[in-house]
Image (cartoon, rainbow, N blue to C red):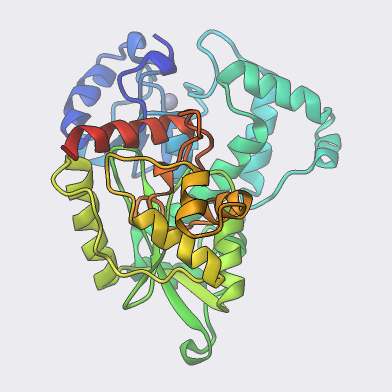
Length: 359
Ligand SMILES: [Zn+2]
């Protein structure tokens, strides 16, 4: 069974952990590709058939995809090579993976492959052929994962880690400050935002908030997330540290009601800054009832700017509050799904979910 055919598309519910654990205790190779076993004590993830000793249940978590394991901060097991196709090993891939481990915070450019004695296109081809993920995606997921791991561990450990240069050999400090900004020298001179990791049935989300308002909510695997966070940070001279606020707690409760279908609208207060026009587009999005969709043209007409379709689309794309500002409710005039930062599969899922529970 390939990953695409797996019944786990986005995430594995905790209620299925026991079943996954038993399958991996049996070293059941039929489960390879269906889920990945991640071991919290070692920070490594494996295919279910890995011959290594079975870890204790309480030290395990399970992910639907290799990318999800990487984003959760785990690195691939060298023994079962969970990223390689079974029965296939590739020297190129082994070299690339170990190069990433030497500095997970690194952003790879084509010229960097020269020092590994290979061409960028060779790296791309091997990676895609072996596990349907490009090398750049791999390196990005690993880089973000190092940071997200700290976020999942919360604020108690993070400050000590930043101070002691935790995992200095793996570039933790570099990766963290590159993506989240340097810790504030003086909290009074900078906006201090807190970031929390929230698990949902569509995969983990990253929520950034201050004490009274939510600033960003995005799926952890969203393309361009690093740039979004950077824009937020720079525009508001903010530093971002792992932690939770009352806003996060309210949001977590509302997300769980949203995904259970109990309540499809959100009351969490948020701060969405932009031009008057952009804010009016976001308000118009919020006024689209769950279970319904609009086209860009309809939104532009509603705002009294029928020729501003393109600007409406741009405002829609600049939304940083997934689900809260429901940009997924905008579709093409011909009914096609058009784009979505979280991916078209998720958009389809969200619209079907809302259609089902809004009646
Ligand atoms: Zn393994």
